[in-house]
Every structure is written in structure tokens, then in C-alpha cells.
Image (cartoon, rainbow, N blue to C red; front, side, top):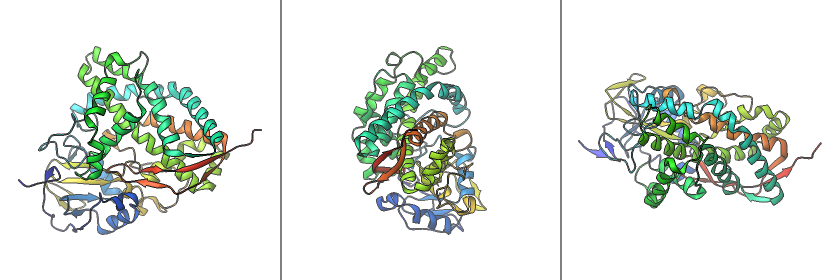
Length: 410
């Protein structure tokens, strides 16, 4: 069996167009929209020879592959590596990289730990922190939104919600970058992210231990489930680790992307200010419009087909969520950022049994941020060029220089 990029190399299936492109090239990752459009134009399935993978970018087929865990599994890895044939750099996630029945009991516990009730209990802390940060940034004048707000807010509030005694903001951000860049090929992005893996992963594992968690946090809920023998104590520690890998970097990215969207669309920001209740649909539109997680993989676990085209067992499937969330067949005018769209069905949070278990917490965080902005900031001014950071899975900003103009009281 020939291997490529950590998985079985398949030949182009009959009837599937071949496209000689590198979807992980830095220029594409910085500006992916032309790649997304061409991928959709080529058909429901495309074979990419550089990695011997099948890519889907139209909404219907991407949703089908991404959600059908009976045919397209996550347990063989959500990146290019196939865990059936290769060893991961860290133990696979027992929630993200698992399928039923193993996935069922861990997801049940995670849903309880991050339920709407739990998110509501954190809302006051999220709101107070967001308002204090916004006040500080207004007073500063120009600031760097990625480090000073997008990174600062989640790394302040999320460890408190988990109940962590130790919070190292840099390690939390870098750990997310390691996890998400590891799902791509062995390129410089992945190698750079993994250089400090032993040090950062060691700190993460220690910070997730039971004796490093405070009573009343989400982490305690997981260890209580272990006491009740719903999961093992080792699984509880791994699930706390999953909080940190998936609950920080994605929210950092979403906040930065939301600020960019609102700075670039001042009319829509005015609508948010006029009606702060639009914070919820605003966040959903940010997710659809920018797809913070742009690509995840599935693996065909049997010979099957998609849209009448053959898919062999072992085929790695690139689910290009960014392309699906901009598919005009689904969204009509996807290139327009609109708060009144209410994009139900976008794929940014996943779908089905692999829908993001932390989405209640993420929504509560973003609603706190957007609400604070709507109440306190009259205008979001871009005072320099936004710079996008290439990532093997994340569509994130590297730099976003902004100025918040204070709203007049009364």
C-alpha cells in the first residue's frame, strides 16, 4: 500500500476531475476565496494529486460528507493523517476524533459540562470582562486587535470557566495553533507549530489534572462524571484538554474575524448598535462569512459514492467548509455580509453528532463581546492593513490595527 501525507494514496476515481493545486499553499490560505470558487465550479468531487485526496466544496456534498459518520469517519483523523495507518503526535481526541459508540458517552458528558445553563451562569463574568476590555481599548486609541482583544478575552475568561488554577495565555493560544496546524500536511506551518510541542503539551497536561482545577468549573463536571463511572479519570483529563484545544483558538479567531467584518461593513455595525439583539445573528453571519475552521477531513471507511461518483475505502476527504459556506447555490449572495441573513445551517460549527460541543460557550462569549461593542463603541476604525495568517485549518487574522471611537452617553 502506497502512503502519501500520512494516508493511503488513492488513484483518481472514474469521472472525478483532477486538479493540480496545493490547497495548503500559503498564498491560498491567505486569500482562499478564488480557490473556493474554482473548487465548487469543478464539480461535486475533485481529486487533488499532490495529496491524493478528494475535496468537496459545494454546500450539499460538503454537508453530506461532513455529517455522515457511518461512511465518512472522524476516528481515522480529522486531518490528512489516517490513524489506521499512522500514529498521531498526541493521543487522538476522544471527542473530536471518535465515532459512535465510543463517541457517544464522552459527548454526553461534554454536552452536560457546556450546556446552555452552564453558559448562562458565565454570562455575567463574560460581559463584565468584555466591557472592561472595551473601555481600556477606547482609552488607548489605536491598538492591535488580535493580541489586545481577540487573544486577550478568551484567554482571560475561558480558563476561569473551566476552573483552571494556572492560565498561561501564550501556551493556550500556541496549543490551539499546534492542534489545528497538525491536521494539515508536513509543511512549514505544521513544523513551526509543533516545535515547542513537548513543552506546551506538558504544561497543558499538568494544567488539566484534577488537582489543578477549582471547584465549580466545567473541568470539575468532567471529573465528577468520572467519579460516577460515566467515563474514566484518564478520559476526564483528556476531555479537559479538549476544552483547551478547541475552546480557545476558535474563539480567538472568531473575535478577530468579527471585528474585521464590522470594521469593513460599517453600515452593518450601525445596525448592530441600533439593535444589540442582533449580536446572535451577527455572530452566525461572521462564522458563515469567514469560516474560522476552513477545512477538516473525514476518511471513507468503506467503498461508497457521493453524487453518483465513486469514493474508495481509505480516501481522505477534504471538507472545505469555507467554500461550502460561500456557495451561492445555498446562500444566494454569499459575498455580502448581512446581519439579517440568519444563516441557519452554516457548517462553521460542524453538523450532526460532530457539531461543536462548545458552541453554547462560544456564543455566550461572542455575544458578550458584540454587546459590549454595541453599547460602548460608536465606530470601529481600521487604522492599518489587516493581515491574514495562513493556517492548515484556521482562517485567522495575524494583525488587525483598530481604533474604537467611544459612543456618547445618554
